[in-house]
Picture 1 (cartoon, helix red, strand yellow):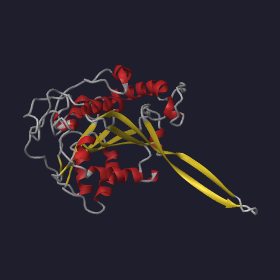
Picture 2 (cartoon, rainbow, N blue to C red):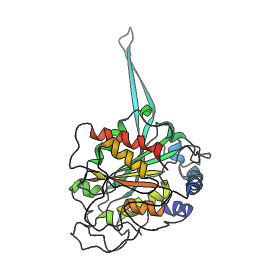
Picture 3 (cartoon, one colour):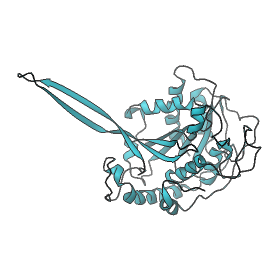
Picture 4 (tube, one colour):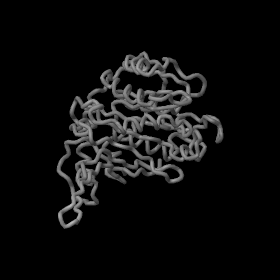
Length: 333
């Protein structure tokens, strides 16, 4: 695997990739609840050293911050988005005084890696919500990751990402720490094509039960080896770092969500009810090296599932999915 911007330090702290296996309907119980708490404490300690730039307000300072109690922040290629208010007054001498107040950032955007063509793979952290300020070892804290695009010609998930970015803090459960990843395949988005520019289907390239499928140009070409693509490598490293409690992966255009007989079955059924999606599997295809399955099988206490949107979104449908994501958090096993 290629070197990742996060460096070997995070990998060492997290103990490697821990690759396990694949199925579409996840059947096992979340029996490793204690693992995540330990991992999150490790992440918090690591970020006490390498996250000083973000804690200090995204400055270029290299000073070491005191131990963190906030949610983890990535300390690489990070920018912030904040709200600025301006007040203008005019004095009796006709001079104008402008006072500008910059409010705390609403989100932090970080590049977790780059595509084959060098485009950044960005993740957005909502830092203006209460859940982002919870200690990493707080048992009530729920880390939610939403992935808008993995196949570059399936872009409706970007609308759901936009709705989640636009929500006010009061619309997001107070215990949710929200991370948004618009696209792990930015080259495919620009070219409006399913594959990355190496003609690899990234959703067949993840390292759990990877198998050689077809050849370049085929819609399911899985690449020359497991996690051969820089986009896959970046996502594997990031999930290992973040360890989200729930990840939603958007696809198109089967308009469905696969049922599950496992502990996340009620959560999927509720998501289907809230959005009007039928509970059914996706027909056809060879489902090895799938991202969501890799995540579930590698981290048995994580919930990760695919949402198949339709060919297009009706008015208000993206917002419906945004609300459904936040609503089903309460059903996490």
